[in-house]
Amino acid sequence: ACGGTSTPPVDSTPPGSTATSPPAASGEVYEWDMLVENSLTHPSSVLAQEFATLLEERSEGRIKVTVRAPGELPYTAADYLTAVGDNSAALGDVNSMSFGSLPHASISLLPFLMNSLEDFYAVMDITSSAVKEELESYGCRNLWYFPWPPQSFWSASKPLSSLKDIQGMKIRTSNVELSNLVQTLGGIPVTLAGAEVPSGLSTGVVDGVITAAYGLGGAGWYDTLNYGYITNMQIIPSYMCISKAEYDALPADLQELVDACGEEFEKYACETMFSQEQEWRDTLISDHNFTINTISDAELAEMAAMMNDYWTAWAEEKGGQCPALLQEIITALDLG
Image 1: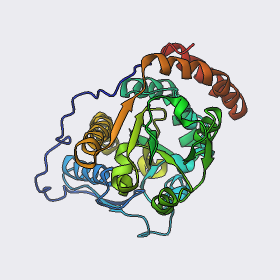
Image 2: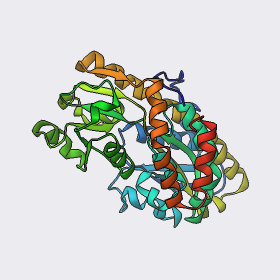
Image 3: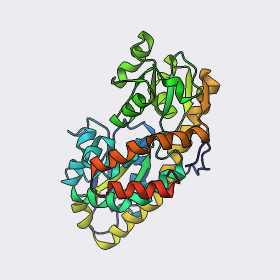
Image 4: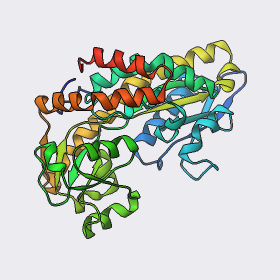
């Protein structure tokens, strides 16, 4: 796997123009709701709104999408898989809150399996067929995916220059896989709601957190943190899905258009998320006086070797195609 923090160049202009959409062409107009996980000003929701605009423009007004923030409709993020699947909403961001029902998608949760955008693309290519099948079993069709920025360690008072520094630290984690990693490193995983993190850091309930610079900046946690250790240890995808029933009911030309827009938008969305992560890392250093170190290739290789048995046991417990997919990923990323 690739080390370092470099990110590919990104064209910040979304596919398609931003001109006012022309009037709807003759024929039926499809009016859809799109469920997103975060507020409409959040970068991930901005991507969703850009995609909605792309669909309306390319369809000449035959498709109109309203992006719905959490709370506008009676679904939580954990409900999006079933809400889209039963066509309660035409489109939705099926994210890690649903991964308990999507074992093949959840392979991405394995710590240190990938640590770059190139790795992420490789894993998504390998798992795509299996994930497509399991999404369709719930009535969903994936149009495009995007990665949440890669996860790293952040500390309030202890400089971090090696994973050995995690020993004895109380670290806030957000999923079981990261909790198991912290325990492996000799730390103490702590479950804490996001809103409780600043006070938890101030009072010593936790000594640090695992998140992305992007997430840390967006949540405003930089006031209670000072040090970072960039590991890119976990890169989690979200799948922007359409109800299969809604898709199947479209005329052939709109099916082709929707698929083409999703394929075109995907690369833009992925590169945008990684680019914004790097921007936030730079901002933490320049504007908030963070000291940030980066894991070495040697330590990455050491962690891959250390985690291999855990990955294998995890995949066997999940079952299905997970063991075979994991081995294909290990081979492709030269992690064996």
